[in-house]
Amino acid sequence: MAEWLGASLIIPDNDAPNGNYFRAQSGSELRLPKCTACGMFQYPPRSMCPDCRNQEFRYEAVSGRGTIHSYFILSQPIQAAFLPHPETPVALIELDEQRGVGLGGDRTRQPNEFRALRLVGNIVKADGSFEDPANVAVNKRVQVKIIDLGDGMGLPQWVLSDEPPAGPLWQVPGG
Amino acid sequence: MTKGSGLLRNKYAIVGVGETEFSRNSGRTTRAMGAEAIKHAIDDSGLDYDSTSWGITCYAVGDAASSEAISSDVGIRLDYHADTVGGGSSGETLVSMAIGAMEAGTCDAFIIYRSMNGRTFRRMGANPPSGTARLAPWSVEHGLSGLYTSMYGIASPLNSFALSFVKHMQQYGTTSEQLAHVKMAHSWGASNNPKAFYKERVTVEDVLASRYIARPFHLLDCCVETDNAVALVVTDVARARDLKHAVVAIKGSGGRASKWRPEYHFNDGPINQVAGIYTKDAVFANAGVGPEDIDATGSYDAFTFTSLLQLEAYGFCPIGEGGNYVSDGTIFLGGRRPNNTSGGHLCETYTHGINMIIENVRQLRGEVDDYCPNWQQGEHTYDYSAGHCRALKNPVHTMNLGWAQPATGSALILTNDI
Image (cartoon, rainbow over all chains, first blue to last red; front, side):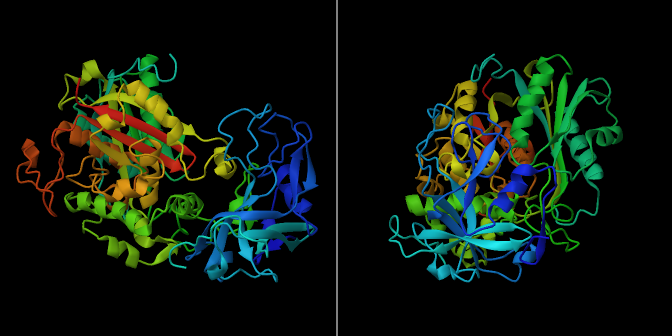
């Protein structure tokens, strides 16, 4: 059985979009569902492409590179799994792929200026343990790190990269 | 009928409001509290229990008794009932649903209520009192997308909203100090509200000195969790004119609207703008007024920043300037456009939105229950120091801004000018 932070991951057999997603992360690359009709990556995974209403996706690898768009620090965790991990950085990662692409089958639906693939994730060190909040900032560049959950499933996390930042660095007040 | 037509402007009114005590340990069921709040609201309206054709709806998140059970206790026969699922932003939304049911000729008066043991049963932002750890194992039902946040530690409303406001701080330079003014302002209202749960005025320093829950957000950026029930009664204005109170008409409503893909809204549009950017077009067009005409706002304050983001979205200040708007005195008692004069969710109580609607009804009636010696005769001192008055001077329009999450919003404009 797949496990994360000591708790099992349970996805019903009839839930192909969610099951396929975690099974697709079994290697070292981030793989996302891509609509076989309009070619848009969709995240989170779903049964229907909201851009063209097609119901078929194929998993494809993306660069796994992105920028910290926003983040906060989990000062007071709630879930049992996170209780041993206070001060975990929770970030929103904007991927390099598909930034600013318009909504809808014709890509013209508004608003589209701010559309991007943005994934919630934790910032972790190279060994997979959670990163020190003091090292996290908006606009820092990150690279995906797939955490093996067992049972052929994986969970994308994010490691700070050596690339120059995408803009001025900014940290939450309080460090 | 088209969106924003305004055809039902001032045709319906909120004629009754009621609530139970606000506590952190009610010791009662949601059924018992719901019945009491509805009784208070019907008594407040003056409508007859037996001869009125009643409709009713409540909203809940699997945490309350149904309207069938509660109406059985209150002793009213229903011509329409439809309970709904939801939390914040439901109050404003159900007012327009109630109007629709009455326009359809199904009933003559409509009760909207929420009853919740929000501290002792289903807490929104923490484990239940049993200590059972929530969301473990990592599981999903109905194909929903919760795993893409929960597995990374997002387990409460504050966690799930935090990314939106941090982006506001980073992009616009909004500070924790500016944000703390929201709590300070609402505490001024609560200090003059005998029924408020937290009556003590707090300072910016108090907020910043409280512990972090999700950094950069402090304990005092978060609302109170309480056990309570609240209720509204809506009917048409013709009936309202024959009832007990000055008429408070529903001038316009909007939503609940959503941003694109609200279940996980981070991929569409600026994450630091909220669904009010869509709701505002309908609500202001329906009401035939604009933000500048609103004398007081009631903005959903699950957290300090939810108020700020909504006030921006509805155009009370330009996008990005909410930090100045909430800290320049405008939203305080005595300011140009006070917000949450009862203390709101941050200080008065947590009801998923309706206590702020009740407050605005009482403000428009001129019947605010403050510490003025003759408040029951509608006489107010307008001394806004602690322990005195919170009544507004001759308000004409109020607006409620409902929130469930950044990607959903509803709004309601009320007036006594009909």
